Image (cartoon, rainbow, N blue to C red; front, side, top):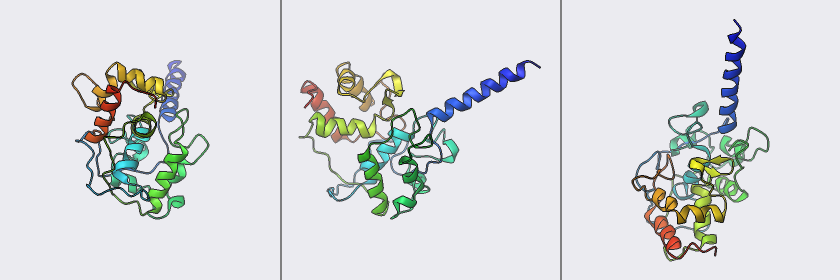
Length: 235
């Protein structure tokens, strides 16, 4: 009989850990690019600076921040929410109306119910603005070809790429594989030991990154390679 309190304590601890590591009442998934397919497809259409694109911007951001194992990937689907496909994400979005969309509401919260949940860092103001703009522009399943392999500066190419597609799983509060990609020093260390390039190219012996998502476009992989070959400058 004395085992019951111990058993209940264990159950409550497990629930608490799940709550801390995953997101609640989130909306989201999509048909484009989920779960380990090939490189993210692009339409060949030039990008407009006035538009936000689902395949290029929104899906990688949500996969990195919300669709890790135990939360909103296809296997875990916490609270029935899957954030790895367009169809799933649209269940939580009202096209043309960000402020009425569950997805937007939960990422702008400042309490324990926000997404990603504490202690994970919140999305940046720029990321939130992109999601809001994408929804208000009709939440289209759109893509474009914006990558420029001649541009591989850390501040304008590499850091934004890592922030939007990798940092959700690799920050001080969520050290996937023990790797922190939230700082230049962390990104540089991962680049110099071969982990960064091995992971994004899905090389044998490395964990595929982004994990649970599509492989980075070839152009972005070339940008990373050029930056590494240039000596990983903090430029």
